[in-house]
Image 1 (cartoon, rainbow, N blue to C red):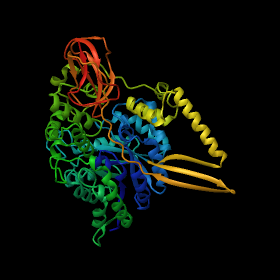
Image 2 (cartoon, rainbow, N blue to C red; image 1 turned 60 degrees about the vertical axis):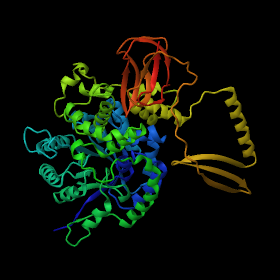
Image 3 (cartoon, helix red, strand yellow; image 1 turned 45 degrees about the horizontal axis):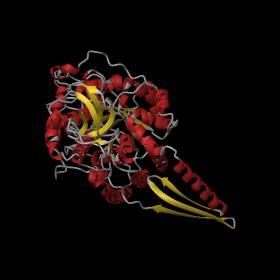
Image 4 (cartoon, rainbow, N blue to C red; image 1 turned 180 degrees about the vertical axis):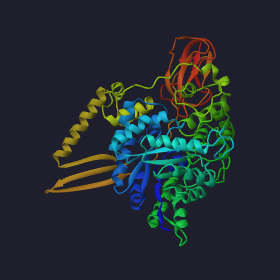
Length: 599
């Protein structure tokens, strides 16, 4: 029998650190690892999409488009892949066709070769526009089956069950009709068992000759065994990562897989330079120490068998733990994980993948901390009214009855030009406008920081003139000094022209880490003994819906707070007149913080 070469996609620069470190790898780490990965012989590097875009602008203050350009420049020999959330792209809501087309075409222009596209509900209607957009770029369209199971925890054959062999086979047929260049089985929570994988892959191979890739997580401990059975059943490629950032909620490591096939009795082979891989692993051992604060876990065991019941994907677990830890509620994580299957059932048993997993996770946290369904995010309300597509099963209408409007959700139509007009004072650079379209207020705040927009005062104007004359003086003396930010690091550059020779010095600036910003509370507030409106959740103030002096009634919307990336409208539980608003837009608040006081 001939030897089959198994195609390997490396996830180190995307899903591995998303799963283990809440997507916190910075550009200085990525710029050191990327060139080595390029030399290792991988077929594909997954480097972008998923939560990386959001994390860059929300937490790291790094431009995601600059990151993609940097990686593309550092990896000339390897194809680059990104994860796209269907009509949600890299955000948490649906976007118009124009925004979808602009995002996909710009991503292709900046270096993406393979678009791995999925929909959180496996709803084919949410994939059509993105599939068309990818095909227009002549790039590779990899359509993705989000693998999930029902309460039995296995791939079903019963016609009364939801997640059956026929369910996935029929879905794959629709993907083929959409023009897929390959298929991917996305096992985001590590639920696919070895023998179920064999059955699923064998069934898919009977209906198509398209290449099939397996992406799975190690969370439950099944992943390596599942990969072997899938390969033996005909899967063409698998996702792995460097051992340093493997297992737990991440992907299986490449090293054991390579050793498995290094046998005279093996009919399979991978073309990866393991010496290079070993070198990368050693470098990562030093690098990951920078991110240890984000590797939050409540268990010593590297395997979480409970995932077979709560079914939360790896990246979501690390984010849940990180955010609960930030608010001193990490001890509530077991209760949240128990609540997740209940919320999922109430929502019609959707696959737990972003953004649906984010909704289910955030709602479960809210249910545990403030009471079951006391608060529903804007995204949750849109979901139960069909705004995210059709769930696999029926939602619990008794619980959500007061939120069901019966109105058909209109497809988003806001154009990129309209988004551009809203921030025209900041930028007219297309990637910046796309960033704003993806995340609006969060994106705008990032762009303001990036572009360093300040009001011009007489003092600042005089300072600028002084700096200008100082620079001119240096130029007259044939010298200059400047600071340069490049790939996450700052450098001092000085140069001197002497006797037709240019002498330069470049020195890296070693910055001390910035202390964490404390929450900003408006100072010098008068003491008020009136009624208080306290925040039921922790998060970031997005928008106030009232102002000082307004008379408010019970159940009136007061403020929008983003919590766990979901937008929540906080309503009043009492009547009164707004006396003090205690936080500014963009401030962070914790549970029980007083948002405003009433007379």
